[in-house]
Figure 1 (cartoon, rainbow, N blue to C red):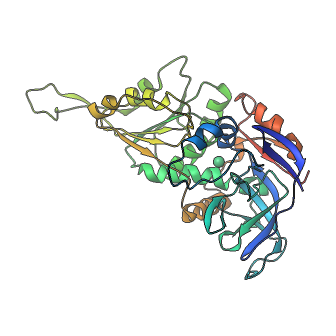
Figure 2 (cartoon, rainbow, N blue to C red):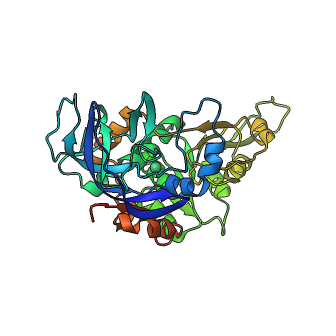
Length: 359
Ligand SMILES: [Zn+2]
């Protein structure tokens, strides 16, 4: 089958063996698969990431064998392995969490040497995890279920309250998914920040109330402006200490994933802020613990979503309560993935490129 393959630290277009569905597995033809920022990070930083594995790694991928990436997919059922219930007819459009089982080990589809992801024409997926895509939901929008579920999970973990004032640093696909999910949870105000004018435009289109260019103004000052209640509150240390301006509670989302951003957010955050770290930084990073201790910050690292959140996201997309469509900026075949990885480096041109390996 045709596939974009990660080989020798590069993306190459090649023919690779077709996967065969095993016990309880379904053969799925990829219809559309989003290129994720994590894939770009993985191509660049895989050796560091793999070197950081602990003594009992859950992640057993090796770099001297091919990897077909792609974990944000919509496909169609084309065949069943042995022992399947065959509950969905051939041709049914499906999506699923990108997880399979290999030799008794849970393995991520798209970061595995043995379970090819959606940058190839065919995948094998466990029958039990397949979700049927509702008929009126476009294939390309169904392919956004995975990144939108990441946003939903991050927001759920942030436990947003109606009086929170939210700051989203980074308006790539994950930041945009977080913003959409904040809207779903009826949170206002949402301050977004990104250096790219195009991404700030997308952030506003997808639900941010204000979009700040950090070159021109501090996102933390903008947050403060919106968070001031106009009242003064007594010092928690007692009445001998000066009263302080009242602030609505702070909920921050780190959606960049490069070194230095967590430290900057900790320095910029008000007392008691919760910072949800969604951006997947794969390198070593530094921050001053005292910045967090002084202000009793809560740092919450999140990963992925639960299967229930994934299924709920698909329903929200189908019902129009979540809409990722504005973030789709391009489509390529498997032979266009290498160039798409380069093009995604320019936030003025692209947010989410979909791979259609059948092209
Ligand atoms: Zn992803």
